[in-house]
Amino acid sequence: MEKQKELEKKIGIKFKNKKLLETAFVHKSYINEHKNEGIDDNERLEFLGDAVLELAATKHLFEKYPDQTEGEMTAFRSALVKGKHLAEIAIELGLGEYLLLSNGEEHSGGRQKNYILANTVESLIGAIYVANGYDSAEKFIKKFILIRLDEIIKNGLHIDSKSKFQEIVQEKEEVTPHYELISEEGPDHNKKFTMGAYIREELIAKGVGKSKQVAEESAATAALNKKKWD
Image 1 (cartoon, rainbow, N blue to C red):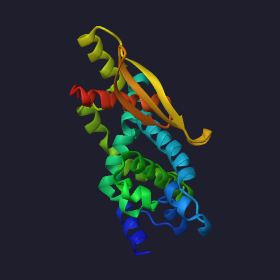
Image 2: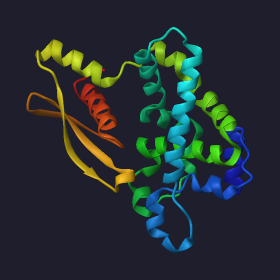
Image 3: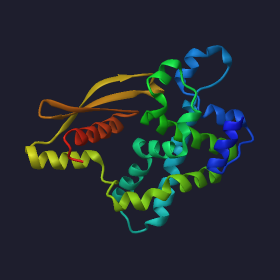
Image 4: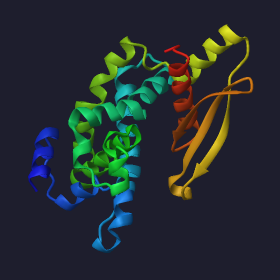
C-alpha cells in the first residue's frame, strides 16, 4: 500500500481502485508462478495503453504542427512512442521497482529490460485511462512523454533507424540492406518477432518487437550501434 501511495505521488494521479494500479505492474511471468492467486497480468492494460498513447500523441502533433506533413508527424510520433524512449521514462519514474516478476525473470534482470519497462509504461497508461478516463491519461502522457518532443526534434531522434541504416549502407557498401524473419513466438494476440538486419548475406544484428516492423526498427538500431554508425 505504501508503495502504491508513493507511485501515485510521483505521477500526480490517485486511483480509487488500487487493484487496477497493482495489475498494471503484474508481468505475465509472475502469473505462471502464482496461478492460484486469482490475479491478472498487465497485458490487456498494455494493449489499451498503447492505443491511448498513440491517440494522445497523434492529437498533440496534429494541433501543435499544423504545417507538418503526415510523414513528418508519423516520424515524430514513432520517436515519442518507441520502446527505448518509453523505457527511459520508466527508469526516470522508477517503475521497475513496482513490477511483480517471476523468480526467473527477476534473476535475469527483468526490472532493467527495456521492453518490459516500455510495456509497463503502456499498461500504466491503460490503468489510468480505465480508472480516471481519457483526460487523466492524456495529462500523464503530456507531462512525462510529450514534453520530450522538442528535445527529440532538436537531436534528430525522430529520424528512424531503418532509414538511417539504409542511407549509410547504400553510401558505404553500395547495396541496400534487407531484413529477414528469424523467429516468431507467442499467441496471435501477443506475438514476438525476431528480425535480422542483413548487408548482402551477412547478418549484422537482430531486433525483437511486437510486430515485424518494430522488430526491423530494433534490428536497424542494433546494427547502427554495432557498426558504430550511430
